[in-house]
Image (cartoon, rainbow over all chains, first blue to last red; front, side, top):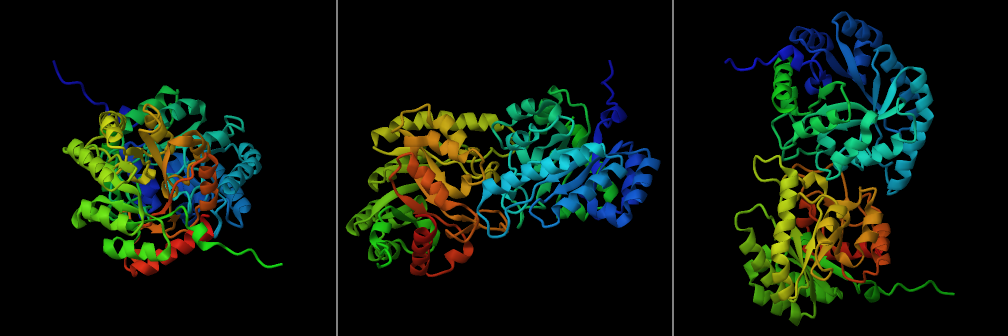
Length: 276
Length: 276
């Protein structure tokens, strides 16, 4: 008897590398490395893509045989120019053949304590954007962020809250992002994932490590480095019938300081060992 | 017509100063300053009280005419000696004539990803402690901590979760702590406060400010410095019929560096202007 062979390329069928995991890696190099590694998908961010050129990025990714699995991000609905910015983001997603635009809602306006009001404005903004997104063939995906970001980045703090808004719209128009880092602590997360069902537009993974750094943004671990039951969450997401991409998305200064190919390899390893 | 006079001493009737707000202030000075300022209550911590002497602290506080409104903290149920430590904490609360022992559950055991298991152990530990606490005339108060502390300090992350456990016991035996800092972001917090009703054993306030510092523990603002609708939460708590103390409890390095009397005065002002 021989040990079962791990079929690495089958294992990578749903893997996507979010470019923010290696934020300083030039897009051309990241795309080439993904193609070399048999990685089928890449998650992109508007700023680096805009700097490279959206049309040009679309051609680059297509030529490499990759799929853009998500575009980060629309949202930030408290900004004065939220409407124009989000319409531009929808257009960029369409140009990239990217089916999912991630929405991070933004926090409280400066000086405000009106959390309910801010949350209501998110729902109103999405109602305004949804027809434009649908017309462009792009699905809006509401991402709840960890409650530690509630005041300054995202007033949508739980999957349940994201679904409360998403469910006002057609399933195909507005979905949700399940990001393990943001929802793992929630004692209702398995129920909410089941409730989400076909609303799951994207699934992202990284790990929870402590101590959190100042500002708490760049404190994420590679899959397996922390305490999140990533396999359990992946299994719950799969149970809904979701067969889409699983993006590794890590923000950490130490990870950003490493060579891109090394980070991609570590992401793949973490994914195969701790997520799949 | 004259402007209504603010009755300052009536305004302070429910005010309590948590000693952790000025962590380096010697207990004798803090107690004397509270008495001078007409502050009726003080929240104590086990470590400084233990260093001063529990019996001695009880006499000091009693002689000053103050009430101990809460003792922080029992819990940390993942520690090897959790049982002995918590029995000792119950005894200390009784000695201090303190009706409420705050329980901070502790995080995940090192290397564990079993969050459900850790949460189950909290419920089991409380079941074991509750009869001892009741016999000592002390109420156990489960404190949900902000989800950013889930892995390393407290696996009880929401008021709803705390109530799910507390409700297994007699109302007088096990209650919950409503700390504005930990629960303000929760879109169900008003429902959960209403649900809590007579389970509310303590109500604590401070404010949410950003950026969070490294480790996120010492990042709290004085009432009014941040974005929490403290008056709204206080009103929700009062609506349940809660007439108990309202503790100002702030952890911040900058606040700890200020003279204790100045911090006490700032806490009183913040309370009168932003909570009451």
